[in-house]
Image (cartoon, one colour):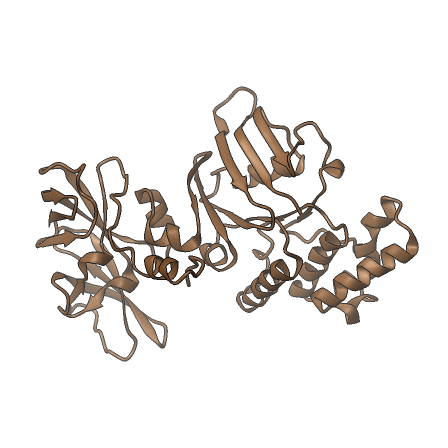
Length: 382
């Protein structure tokens, strides 16, 4: 396997605006990195530059310490798994997996050894004599992954490999990819628009927007300490609640905000650079809201929609200033549309963003701190 370094990587088409605007990124040997962001943010373009399907307008790409900008895809030591599987319909599973090695001139015994090893790893030995039309979507995706494994590449690239699968197969195949990463100790760059995949698979998540890296870090770091409003809103489902307000008190130990929707809150963030009278937005995740008024900071709204999930429910509220909020509630409690609903938030759960969308650093970022103190990797459960 190999490390990856991108330096000032830029891509534009016909001199128009940059699709990628100066990407700097380091990927350690054996790391699982997930690229996420909205459509058009440049994540798939970045993957195509890595594998050599497109050429960078500027900047360098290093794989294993070697600059590969001008190397063709076959010489880069990479293997790519596409969204569409791209299997040869007239070939058996065995021949699909062996084809690349055969073209490369590998010996028959070596081909057989690699294919059987990959098939055992993916638990598809019993499928080797079948044709793609005889396989389920999940089985076809495992064959596509197996075709990549047999090449023993320095770097695996995955381009939204689960997007064509139904919900149950997505979960199953996601778990298989996670196990595969640990078995192979592989360096993987994985593109997805699904943040659940990002949070559960990645050692590092790279959030992109308009061709730029907004933030790169562990899943828990992005969840607990987003660097700006975009990252905070993109990571987490449902999206973070944002309440507009005005700073009434600011200091290194916290910020007091008068909210447009009524009431006052104090957030445990570093407000040493905030000014009294400045406009800000206070963020609160739905799962951190508490029903009732158990905490010191509370809100009130009118129930518009209730989504029942069984063990929990999502309660959508309209607040007094016309803004909306969503709260994750106890699924055992009956909530009726049209009734008033109060919820509270602990001061340590609140985020604050300035007028430019920059986050003020949280002082007690919850389980991220606890995990780091315990010497555990900072991973989040989505």
